[in-house]
Structures are given as C-alpha cells and as structure tokens.
Image 1 (cartoon, rainbow, N blue to C red):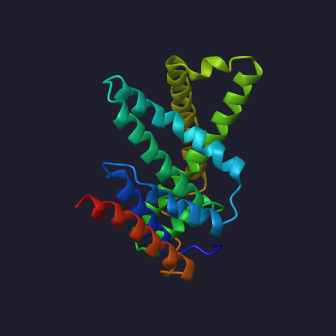
Image 2 (image 1 turned 120 degrees about the vertical axis):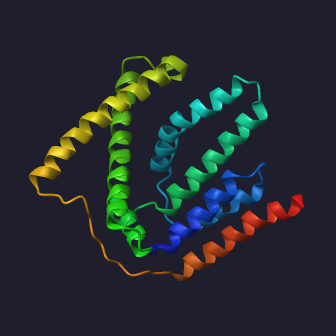
Length: 215
C-alpha cells in the first residue's frame, strides 16, 4: 500500500471514532491493524519507539483512572489508545509531514488549517527525536529504573514543554525572515486508491459488527 489519498483520513477518522467510543474491547478491532501489517512494509523497531513515546502521555490518563480503582476502565483506555495509535502510525508510515498535510488539502480544508496540521506534525516529530535523545542519555547514566516513576514522567513532560517553546520561538523567527504568510498551499485533487477502498470496507465491518452484537 504505497499510494495514499485523502480517503486515508476518512478511514482513520472512522476507525479512531469507532474504537474510541467503544464500551468494550473487541478482537475485531485488531483485524485492520493486521491487514495493514500485511499490506505495508513496516519498520517494526521504529514503530515500537513511536508507540513508547506516545504511551508516556497515555500513562497519565491510565494512572488517573487507576487512582479511582477502576482498573477495567484503565485497561480499556490503554487498549483503545494503543489500537488507535498503532493503526494510524501504520496507515501513514513512510509519509512526511507535508504529505499528510496535503491529504487535508485534498479534502478542501482551509489553507490555514492545512498549515496548522503541517506544523503540528512537524513539532511532534521534533519532540519525539528530542525525547529519544534525552532518554538515551538517562539510560547511559544508569537512570533507567527511575524512568518508570510518576515523578520522572512529570519531569519528562515538563522538559518537552520547554523544548517545544524554544523550538516554536526559533521557527517563528525563521518563518518571519522568509516572509511566511501563515499559509502553505498544496491544491491537490481528491484521490482514492483500490487498497484504500478495500481497507475502508474492512474497517467499517470491524467497527459495526461489535456494536451489532450488543443489540
């Protein structure tokens, strides 16, 4: 599945919403992920690194629910979040920030919104790389066990916020110097590919069937 059109955004919206509002976990939710694994060449190690990074933020939501001793809901939140993250990372694997933002342009989103998507993805990637460097430095200094404490999570998030502010200030100066007008234009036409249509049908079936079983 090398070609991506705007239909990929529709697919991910359906899957993310369907899994996100589910009251129970269903094995059918994993089928689209397995299908993507068969259709695309996935760099497993790189995928696991990204999942680990994103789970640092999921952990806060899970811990807050666990404090209320609602362990079933905490497990459900963790499962839903990881399914959604896995699906999206695998679906858009290999695409750059500009290519993903261009898909929103195909759906006729405003140029300012497309620019916002581009820079948001750009910053997420920067922060992911920075976090990897910081974590590697901590591991090399023998602080590995301390990373799994709640205080360590808070310090890591605070560090990411500071880095984001510094990077945003630097980027703002760079864009002003280059005469950026707050818009990045792609002007692409809507595209849909055969494998995307097949994946869309699979996702709809896997999302609807668990709800029909509850009726």
